[in-house]
Image (cartoon, rainbow, N blue to C red; front, side, top):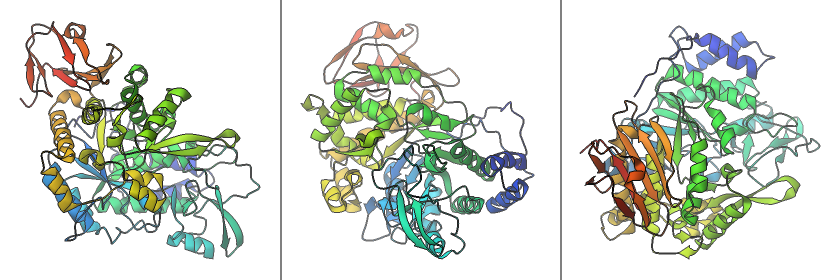
Length: 586
């Protein structure tokens, strides 16, 4: 991990908190709120605030994303089963695990939390989380935009009791809410009966998920106490779910408002003072430049999801055209020290389409969507201006998304799938791998039918004995995917040029090749990353890379030296090359 001296003066904790809280609660006694926040997080305000521009990661970091019960066993609780699988199969390959909401919940597969303080008893308990944190950095979800309608806070709200009274956003059906942005087509307001009479509460995502009123400082202090609670139990990365929606203002979109950014800055200040090595990661599935804003001035998120990567890379693989992917990559600013991108291709959700607004035109987007339908995918929509429905998300297992191209299915599914991940693993940032991508799991149509939700298509579960049997069979596609993905991960973590903040430049080769150059922070190692994103062979003239003839060059994936840096090579369909001057680990 690299420490970069921060030229800015180190403000005292009280000063920083005062600035955050004054923005959020201008009508409150800011000094009292500062002391309440310090007490809620149990901080020593005299300890100097750590510098904000430290890189809390290196090339050895990679994250697996999973539900707590994705892997099950009849012999032990799911979290214990998951920990054993990760330890046996992925220790030394991955450094962190994002366990999707592991609290008691009532809907949305965990994102309608009914009790923030407990682990769901069907999964295990806090001791399971603590033990897992001894081997892996544990990322936990902080679902602070909304909670379940079954949460005690909402029951108290309806009864006019505390804690809960004043904790939820109310509005009137007569209000002009036409500008509100949201990814759902269900009614925004839900009528409820309260002790004070009929009310309408705000539901961005659904009527079992009631939006919390962070404009109430008492609720904000509850959230701060929860962060302390999680830190005490081993959580070292905080995923702020749907954080762009947390602040509401009449007449606005209620998305990515300045106060939402201030909430992130407040939580960043508190968390980094309590645990200087913890991460804050924001989940904001919005167009690219709105997403980039959550880096702030290296004082908001440590990591932001690279939401444009999955649909753009999928489009390139579907069409064999890398033009949009290259243009996007050239437009992406390098992350400043103390921040980095969180790269992923698949998750528990689908492949979002909003992040390619302005990058792909409607015809290009619709051609990709049509191909995904043919490969068994579902399409989720949202309401847009004029009451129209617009594609919002492709719901499909990434394994099936790689069945073919816009021209139809072909024989290159495995190679296309591995190629996609080779691209992602070489990019600037920290890679996040959905567990079903590591395992090569396909579409789960039965789950969609059973739940009635498109997103269930990529939320399968495995019995541990069945999974182990598949991974031990060399002829199993699951074993082939797992072995090749593990090889790439192990290669990546040995290369200093793959540090999340190492230099990156896009290379201009022929249309079918997506290529870029990485250089280690000490400038000793460089890696040329070249990927054939087409189902046809592509000829690469190594002279186009300007490799220095007086240095030895090595191709990492094939584990072979390059004998002649001036000859041409034919890349097979979806073949990838990582060419380096210093093959670390060899």
